[in-house]
Image (cartoon, rainbow, N blue to C red; front, side):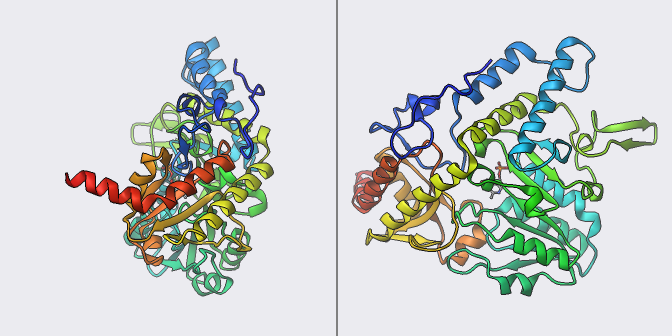
Length: 426
Ligand code: PLP
């Protein structure tokens, strides 16, 4: 059904061949064409994922868990096989994974679904590194409950120090919600330490794994979190699908956010009972093609090996950080090139005297795609003393040659930005 397993060889320094990613092949990446360094926003998709999506709609398309006919059964089986594959990638069991439309949806489900545990005076601990999707839902439910959101503050490298964890997590903490990997700085957070502190305070732990799942070996049983969220599109899968992990035993604390077809056990004129996890959280027709595509992406990553994926990202991040540190007009944020910190293939920087958006435009003129702005993490970007930063984020298709072309573009960015400004004024 797909070409899984039949991949062309990657160029030197890449882990997967850009030609195996139709968009990158179309853009002639790796040969003076596009250098795509916006993988933290969304990754490009390998052929095996695209072919899986296509094959679902061409050969299986039916509503899962709703029909006794042959295609309905095939769709149900494909969806449940996808659940097993996605679970395996993160060290979970299939019945601990509910499909959602993405990380934001899963985190909202968690915040609203756990809101009943919050009472006046209670606290929700988050870090100052959080993506808005792991902050705004908690601010909302805490306000409704009369509870307070407290922030664990990272150091200049973006790492969370032990004493900060102990300062913020205490007897009033009910929920701790932190990201595994910062989407701005790429640093890996000390999740096991945070989980230990939360256990000591009898608090539940929610992990935002949107970035980590694509970059690191993630074993949710080993990490010990109660809940986790991640997105298909950031791990080489499709947009519009993601997963919510609930540790067996923790799911009972969750109230379903979306209610309707598929999640109910019995419905009466004046009431209803709903199914247990995960079906109880999957109201409505699921994005079955998306889930099956996400599972193809999980198998693709397993095929590469998550240790190798992590080593690849770390090597490229160190190359980017070292190169940026050597460019006088560049300012690097977060972990330095020689830092002992564990990190992923994500680097934040600015070009001195040039706004982040203009710098990103200047890089784009040289066919280097980076993202600029606050990256949905305004409190962190303010903490870094900036209004906006540029972010270069690598993928498995990124080569050392791509990084070198990126660094050349950064070096030329001041000059290029001045030319862009001059052209705009004509
Ligand atoms: N959390 C983190 C750390 C992210 O990087 C992102 C997306 O950039 C999200 C949450 C939100 O993910 P999505 O837009 O897929 O819902």
